[in-house]
Image (cartoon, rainbow, N blue to C red; front, side, top):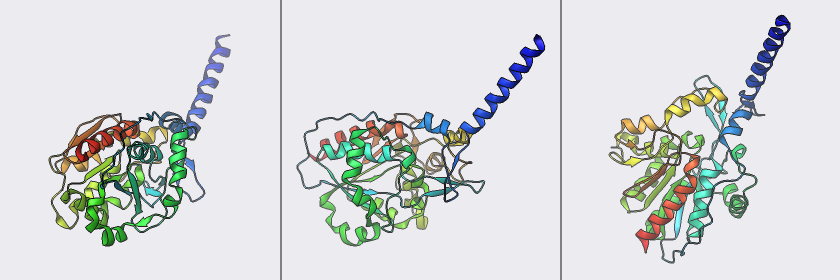
Length: 300
């Protein structure tokens, strides 16, 4: 009898190990990249966001435009050589945009070279009617964005039309954006012209671009909320990432003189001078509300 029980227990444990293995195994895509495992998707994505449909008093002034810099790249290489299928996180992009749009702002959507915006579609909240609506409204702009280089050439002199630069998160914000001199020009333009910069999760990696060409870090001494490197180090355990990242975000910003105000990937948001930041996808709704409150207060 005991022998049968032990055999049954061993069989159950073996089955559980197999199930856990497959649930935590990243999903191989057609191009050879990996999207998150089924377990990671269950733990890290939602079908409906926590977006609050607030009726704001709409902004009526001339500074009604927001430059949104998206990534156009999909695959982020890990230390082990595997490619993570990424892009901009749809919740981190679209939920703040919903708040800003409801408050009377519109968007100039760009990518570095004008290629289509890449979203982490595996993270899209498919049952969220608000998110689906704004995605559909701007879908043609996502598919045919403007070039950041053209914006720099043609729009810098029209700074009186703009309120902010918004750089959404998602691991895709770490592909090329921190090394892009034109991103640095856009951020410096916003900083010098007293515009706001809004970003969250891995999006603050874009701020690293301001150190290119041996320039002093533009945000030294700033408080900011950023996705913690320590969390990224743990996510391969559940198959979110297919390996460990080559470079993190939070520690590099900290080493440059930023003060990171969060230690978890939570709802933390932060405003310091003209920089508005959020810690993770969980902060998307709070970031949108904070951005609207801050902009409307400043611009009225």
